Amino acid sequence: MKIGIACYPTYGGSGAVATELGLGLAARGHEIHFLSYAPPFRLSGLRERVFFHEVEMADYPLFEHPPYTLALAVAIHQVARDRGLDLVHVHYAIPHAASAWLAGQMFEGAGRPRLVTTLHGTDITLIGRHPSFRSMTRFSILRSDGLTAVSRYLKRETEENFDVSGASIRVIPNFVDTDRYRRNAAPHDRARLAPGGEKLLIHVSNYRAVKRVEDVIDVFARVTERIPSRMIMVGDGPDRPLARRRAEELGVTDRVSFLGQHTSVEDLLVLGDLFLLPSKTESFGLAALEAMACGTPVVASRAGGLPELVADGESGLLYEPGDVEGMAAGALGILASPELWRRMSGCGRRIAETRFSAPTVVGVYEDYYREVLGR
Figure 1: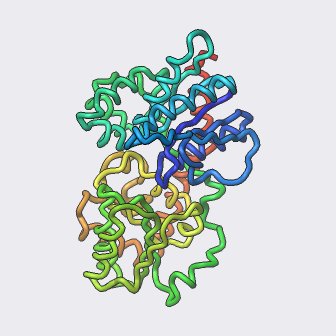
Figure 2 (figure 1 turned 180 degrees about the horizontal axis):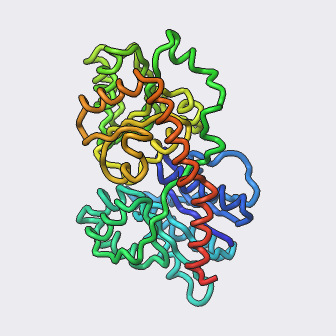
Figure 3 (figure 1 turned 90 degrees about the vertical axis):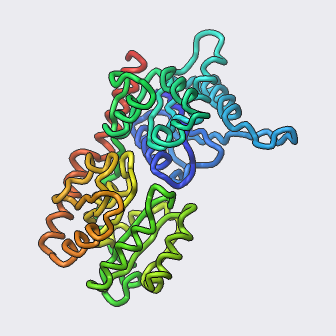
């Protein structure tokens, strides 16, 4: 198959999954064409059967805000026409699904590629529900030839908020490369991050309000009072200054490291003793899955799609959003018990291998494409 993939190139779950999916499909012999305004952050180097097409924006003084949606539609149409794409798979409904639908309308006869839309989260739970976008989001969803959601939670949200039949939505979860994300990677940097042999707690996110990064610091401060620890903060975003300020207020600045964005986050996750994700909600929780694959137990919120991923009491512990005291107590319990830690570490790894491995989920997408194409 010849497949176009449109996604946001920035740091975050949807772009990571879209990129890994494309690379996995290319390894299976399919021709993959990525389309975005910049290379996706996990797309690097030359890959066989993998192509990147930069969306060109018109530099015209009339446009205070360049019309990216239209430019993307033109790019999708051109690549689909010139490369003979069978299918375009867009990640995130707004604006990608609308652009892909418009690109399809530009075909006057045969040759229109099929459109598959994957819903990832805030395109449904936040942005898509805004009055200025809701009707367009619903229109784009209903015009897709195939529609997937990354969790049962997100499927329900789409049904309830956009009056879309659940029968039209296929739940295909996010996935992880369990060969790359694994515990036996050499922890060569642990001594640098924890020079005193402290426990290492890790958080990875895009630092938006929904991630509750101040709660990360609050939980850590309570943990390090009892067990000497270090906090590794990976990623970047608008709430990063809030996390820094909270660390200063609690007097733990010297034990919190803000490392910014990392394309090889697995090199850090394998060093972790615990992964913290106290989000208000998560449509799936890809970072938690990557931590589990690395054998790092997870303490997270019982919200959104996280209960579908984290086995509460087995691969980690779940608490209500905002329950800082509960999360801190749970974290201390895991860190203080080597036996409990080993059990949770092994369980998380098994879940990643058996339910969310890249070969399994990429194969599910491959079969779904054939279903949409009628092959």
